[in-house]
Length: 86
Image 1 (cartoon, rainbow, N blue to C red):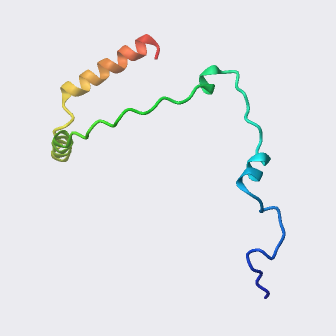
Image 2 (image 1 turned 90 degrees about the vertical axis):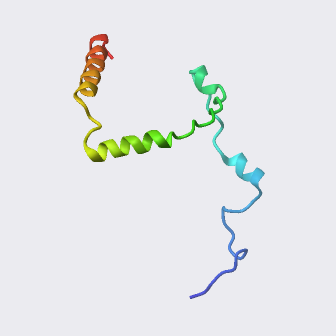
Image 3 (image 1 turned 30 degrees about the vertical axis):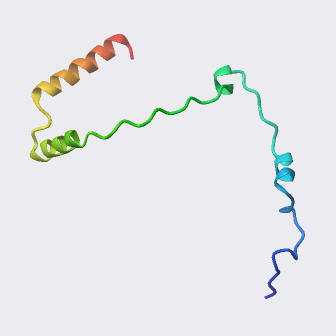
């Protein structure tokens, strides 16, 4: 088997970065102006509330996290959302 060095074979993968950029498809213009606007910067992430996370983990492990009151509140929220159609 013959091994070729890095510059011994001529092929399409050669040229400067400017040459490669010229080969790309032209940018497409959209009909939606919202897509043409620059993206908004992300807000800094809020810190994780480790005390709350640990408390919830303990309640789940103990089987006390889901209470009848929480189920009622969740069902009320679901029914209200369904009544509004969304």
